View (cartoon, rainbow, N blue to C red):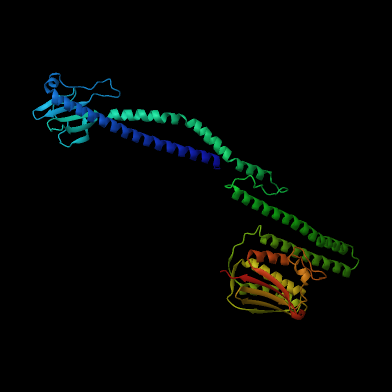
Amino acid sequence: MTSIRRRLIVLLVALLSSAWLMTALLTRYETRDEIDAVFDAEITQAAHILLGMARREKEEIIEHGGFNPPESQPYAQTMLYQVWDNDGIVMRSMHAPETPLIQNDQPGFQEIHYLNKKWRLLNEWDSHHTYHIFIAEPVATRAKLAQHISFQILLPTLAFFPILGILIWFTVRMGLTPLQRIRQAIVERNASRMDAIDLASVPDEVTPLAASINDLLNRLKRSLDSEKQFTGNAAHELRTPLAAIKTQAQVAMRADNDDDRLHALQQVIQGTERSTHLIEQLLILARVDPENAQNEMTEVELNQVIHKVKSDLTGYANQRHINIQCHCQTDLSVIGNRWQLEIVLRNLLDNALRYAPEHSHINIELTDTPEGIRLAVIDQGKGIDPDEQINIFNRFYRLNGTTAQGSGLGLSIVQRIIELHHASINMQQLANHSGFEVSILFFKKN
């Protein structure tokens, strides 16, 4: 696992080390440049002195065999020099050859190699163009002095690096304290404590992270509360049919005649069917719950969905002598989950078949509107009172006075799937109580 603290410390140390290295290089370069300027000025001054001496005391200089700079000067090394005139060499240093140090007449400074060393040489004439001087100094002298001065400047800062490392570690540790507080706050959260993290003392840079964690905690809390409510309601709803099945099974065991036994067994079968339907709806609801759903969205041809669901429910419709009619435009598709859309239509059509009177009609309409694609299921039942419509999507809600069997989960499942598809659902009583319509609008994308 990558440590933010370790990464920050490494990055800061690397950054400071790079800055120090660049400073060292610049210092070395600037120092060498300044030393070159000073030493070049020194060579130029020495050349002028030697040329002056050559003009005034030519014979005396030759008699004494040349001139050497005092070796006691700081950082001085024996210079090479030669002074020439038209008659030949006038004077030279002890280690200078009797031949010219260079064979070209290019005036000014240049670098030469002599005695396996690199030299900085000045080639210059006097003002009367009578005397010609070559004066050179080892380049190594300058390099050693530049290195010495650079070390004197940079060594104290290098010695400060361990202290700087400790300061960086302490600063990073203090800077990450808010993250430690958030970490501790998250550790303290559990299923019974899902309150939000206090953002008052959280730095601006960490606020988005803390806000996202609060949003996650809020969603987890809603999910846990929903699961608790769902589990409690499911247990209550399952307890009743299971108890009825047990009671009817006991009645069948104690029955004295075949008619009573057959009636009790029929009640057991009905209770089993109701429990099976309830469990199926519970499983469907768990799969389409927005907190848990992982749904693949593809292009779905709605006419195929309608044909599939209608075929599945044709047998039940025939039992109740209800005619299902389709008034659908062709080639209308939406982006969605085919299985979920089949669940939506199956629940709507199943409700219509349960609550519509026998020998009636149910219409399925599919139309393309300016707002989007509209899917509607219209039956000839008495519908739902407006006072109850606000509760109809609640889990396990049953209409008052209804005798039709059901789990009370169908419309709750429909609403969840509609939310996942970013669509809307609407219900209305038709004029003169001639029927009830439930419609879904799949909005067009801009």
